Length: 368
Image (tube, rainbow, N blue to C red; front, side):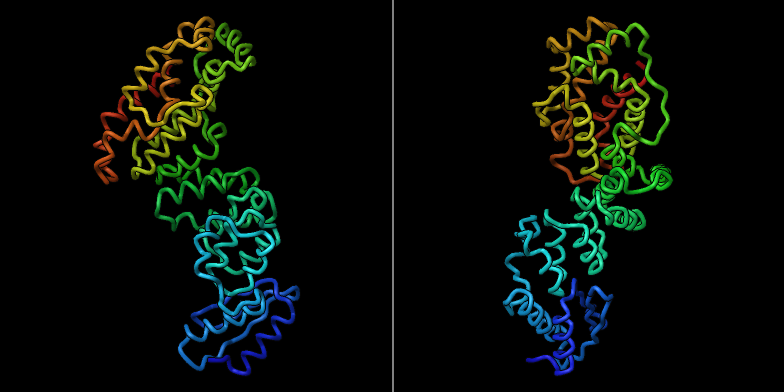
C-alpha cells in the first residue's frame, strides 16, 4: 500500500526542508512539521484504514531518517525507556512521528535545551515533562520553567499520590517557579496533605512555614556549634532540628502522618525522614523494625554521641530519638502492611500502633 501522490509529494518536500520535529494528530489525520521558518501542516488523505495508512507514513519517515522503513523498532522500547538511547540518535527520534520515540527521547541523558523544546512541541504530556525535568541540564535551561509551569497547572488533575509528590519535587527545584507560586502550592496542602510530602522531599530545610526555633540554651548553643564545625553528626542534627527550619520539618512530617493516602505515601515519608537524618546512620539498615530501632537507640554509646552528651547532657533523650528516626524505613511498617493492600482510613487504623509512638517521639523533639 502506497501513499497518495499528493501526500507523498508534500511529505517529501517537508523532509527535504530538514524539519526539526514531526508530530501526527491521528484524530484529524494531520501531520505537522516544525522547521526553522515555523510550523507546516499536511492533511493526510488515506485510501485505506487510518491505522494502516499511518503505519505507511511512519515507514516513510523512518526510511528517510534512519535508512530503515520498519518504523520505530518495538523491541527497543523498553531499552530506550531505561535511558539507554545513544545521544547521537536523539534528533532522529523527534522525526519519526512516533509517540513512543518521544518517550525514549525524554528518558535520554544527553538532551539539550533546544532538543527539549522540540520534544515539547511534539508532545505536551505531564510524564514527558517530569522525565525531562529530572534531567539537571533541562531543569537549568530555558525549558525548565516552562515545563514546571505546565506541571503546576496540571497538578489539580493528578490523582495518584506518588505522581503528585514527584511533580512537586521537580517543580520545587531552584529557579523553576516564583515564590508566589510556591506559596500557592503550599496553601493547597491543607486540602491535599500529600502535597506536604512533596515539599518535604524537595525542600526539607526551606519549607514555606514559620516555626519558632527549639529551646536550646545559650550555653548549649555555645558548646554545640564548635562540635558541629568538627562534623560531629549528633551536634549537627541537634542544632538542625532545633532551628526554625527543623521545627518546620517536624510539624510538616506530623501533618503527613495524620492522613497518609496509601502505603506508598507511608513508606516515602519514612524514607524522607531517614534521609533527613542520614548523617547519624550513613550505613544503616532501613529494614529494621521499630522495636529493633528502639533497642539500638537505647544502647547507643558511640564516641560522637558521648561527646555531644557531654555538651548537652539534658538532650540525651532527644539524641537517642534522632538516632532512632535515622533508621526509619519499610521495616517499621512491614509487620502491619506485608499482608494487606489496605489504603485510606483502614490502612491508617492498622498503622495506629506504629504511628502513634512515632508521633509521640516527634512531639518530644518539638517540645524539647
